[in-house]
Image (cartoon, rainbow, N blue to C red; front, side):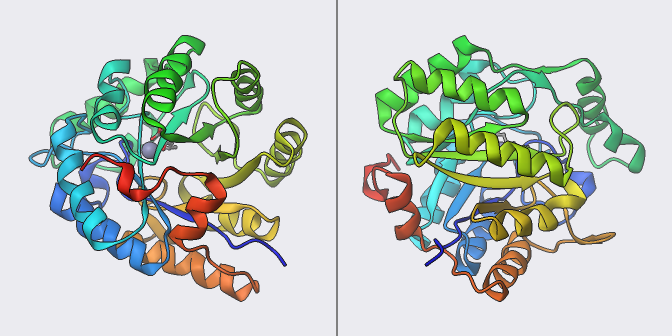
Length: 309
Ligand code: KMH
Ligand code: ZN
């Protein structure tokens, strides 16, 4: 009997900017509504970032997270997963503020430093809604997404040991799997692990099916039975890579953080639209979609009553 497929939905992120899509949720109310709709559509995990309600810039303030997380928590039983990647350029302390304040069941943990180039998107847009957007995109020409071993140790100790939060380990390249294996060897984190293999970020591994197969093979060797794996691909490869992961027995992540589209040149009108699309693919493959309770059991989460909202 194949395992059910855990769908994570990353509803806004800190990469896309307001000019790129009118459907990107920005305010706490928009993020709450869009996340609840995605949960109702079949996402059992909601991966969350916050934005400044006035200008849409990625924003680390815990009160923004508390606002939308409180609403999602009251209106769905989805697992709430707080980003510690934050917005490109935030300090380590800023990136951790919200998660430390709400003590979530899950948080992301990026397990390697890398280039993270989103500057090529700048050429596709004009008539910016906000002045900060083109400068923000441009700044990533000379930007290192910092996730050193010291950063990783700080996060697993403060948040993992301190709050019982479990991690969505974001692996953007082969070496990140080995970084994670080393972290596990230190005894800092315990199984089961959720490994999110990320394709198509400029600076990480490319969205090539051979890479997916190889990273899955290596993850299997390094983590054996101790892990669940999931795939996200940025941009146009989002649905095909999620489909491939489901076919290989993995889990999937979709959402407007990772792609603003639902088809070639066609913008997704909501996060739920992407969730419903992958859900229908998964079900047409003869697989079931995991409920939040199934996700909690498989990932060993502490429970929705143990978060501070
Ligand atoms: N933006 C994604 C490619 C995080 O929030 O920690 C990866 C991500 C990072 O979700
Ligand atoms: Zn994220």
